[in-house]
Each structure stands twice: as C-alpha cells, then as structure tokens.
Image (cartoon, rainbow, N blue to C red):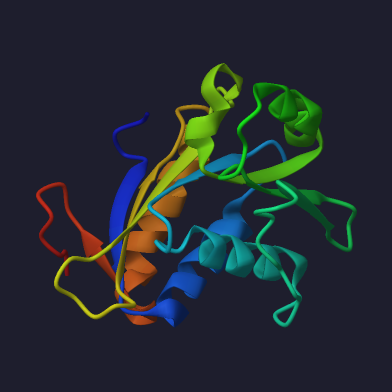
Length: 183
C-alpha cells in the first residue's frame, strides 16, 4: 500500500457515513475491488447501500444485503456494473468459484463484505475498508480505515487529499497516524 494513500475517519453518524460512501463511489472506476471488513453490525451493508445508490444516482433505490443470495448486481445508465457480495454465509469454497469474481472485476466495480472468506481468490489490488464501532461513543459513530492500492496510486492519493479537505464539513473527523484528529 502506498503510504500516502491511506486515511482513518470517524463518522459522526449515518449521514456522514453516507457522504463517505458517496465520495468513494464518485472516485471509483471499473476494475476496483472494495474489501469491507468489520464485525456484524459495523456498517458494511450500510456503506455498500450508500455507495451503490450514489453510483447509480438513485438515492431511493432498494439495495438489500445479498446475505442469502451472496451477490446482487446493479447497472448504471452507462452500462457500468456494480457487484455487491456478502460472503458471510459462504461455507463451500466451490460456491466462490461459481460467483466468478475475476469476470465481475473485469466488467465492473465490486464491493465485497466478509472478504476473509475469499482466501486465495482475493483480488490483487483492492481498496481495503475496515469499519468499526467507536468504543464509548454514540452508537452511530464509526471508524473507517481506508487503505488504497499502489496501482493507481496517484488517483487514490488525490482521493485521500480531498477527504482530508472535505471531511469535517460532512461530519467526518480525519485521524492522523497516532489517532488524533487533524484540523
């Protein structure tokens, strides 16, 4: 990972988490894979829902979690595909092969919840997003730790710079490496 292409943010609530997802969606490109890590209830599906709604420019779109289906696919007005995976219930490795992740990445953008289950099938250059509830804080505050790949580093460094500039205005507290908020 490129050292300048990572950022930690604390959202002040669901709306701020939505703004983060919308911003990341606007910077995404076909071939991007977003690996979403976090405990049950951390906000992976919430982030994915906001990302997909923003990408498709349909703020009221019903975006259910694909927990039982494993995958839902969406298409925007230009034909770009967005694949939303929830691998929580994946128990049989052969099921993973049937999902054909390489083809999905070649044709679109993938959001993958529970990527731990990918094993050797994990994408080579993912954006990693770790979501955690903030201990001792209001229930809706979340820590988002984003790490971007060296591939397309220039694009992701620009995203990080923009998030640092934009963060506080949309309810995202930018954290430095030691965990202290930056002004």
